[in-house]
Amino acid sequence: MTKTTRRRALCAAVWVAVLAGAGMTACSNVPDDSASDGAGERNTAPIKIGAVSSLTGPAPFPDVPAAAQAVFDRVNADGGIQGRQIEYLSEDDGANPAQANRVATRLIDEQGVVAMAGAASLVECSANAALYQQRGVVEVSGTGVEPTCFTSANIAPVNNGTVSGYASLLYFASETLGNDRVCPVILNSAGLTEPYLALIDRWEADTGHTAPHVDTSVNLGDDPTAAILATRDAGCDAVVFNSNEPVAVAFMQTVKRQGLLESADWLTLTSAYTQTAYDALQAQDTLGLYANSEFLPFTSDDPALDGWRTALTDAGADLTSLSEGGYVAAEILVEVLHSIDGEITRDSVTAAFRSLDEIDNRLMGMPFTFGDRTEHNPNRASMMVQAGRDGWETVSDWVEVPAAATNG
Image (cartoon, rainbow, N blue to C red):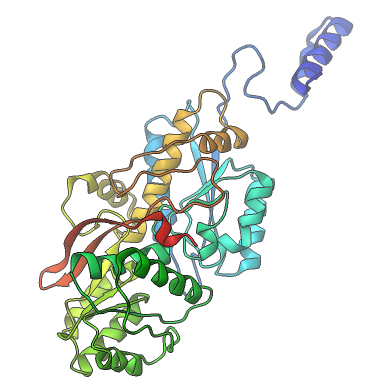
């Protein structure tokens, strides 16, 4: 006998025994976690969605969950989903793995979230991947940072990630810009050097190019002068390096100081694609840097960005490439929630993702997929932007990286 059947039997027995309103009181005190009471009463409780992000710490990402919140606010203003409002519970992990696991556990076990969406964290994926799998919770990350974000059964980031992003730069440098001597410079960061080296091997096998020089001698944030001079000595006509925003600016300043700005094409990751970085590049006269945009470039005037701009402007959130990730992640989750025919629960949401074929989103260069895969990297497409005299300029169509190039 199911819980609902037992409850109905209990209520009937109480009603028969007392033949009065006291029986109704007894029934109403029996816990009810079903979609309705069996008589068509609709569940109006909020749909709880969680997120664990690095809102503070060495590299905070507050604009990512803020963009997701803007989407959920818009949905709520339109009446919600199945008449239910979305309650977004965004927590800060402070870039601390223990805290990331602690707040995620609370969101799942105490708050009862049905899914996670719109997060961006330095540590959250590795801290919580096993938890999400154990609890049957799906996470659609706005910005996946760690390799674990892209190799977990229950986590699907909507951004490229550093490995796919780096791959798109290699392919763009050789196949679109036509450079023959593409040199990867890998600024060492925890857990990424080996994946980058494996990626370079696959890029060489796929394109027939051979990198004349691969440099792994510099740690992220160290003086890159020796590595930059080595690219000159190797005759590189394109240099692809990984960086964050301040490192990209400092790297290009060193390139200029060595008189090498015009000697090669310089390409780096999407984290340098910001207005702040552009202003710094312009001030130090090091324009020309290429970066990959993991979504439709946020500095373009494409009308597909209108909804994103309006939602974030109304919410007072920052218009950045990162915020596109939070926005897209929330939109995808909302579309999945709308697709559920029946009660929206954690189980039904996870089942909907497991049966998902694909979802097209105008800000992505590839459809979002999930299904029954054991790892997820659905977005392997970037548009390239370049720091020009009038700002960041879009200089390519979508550059789609083959799945084999990023899967070991």
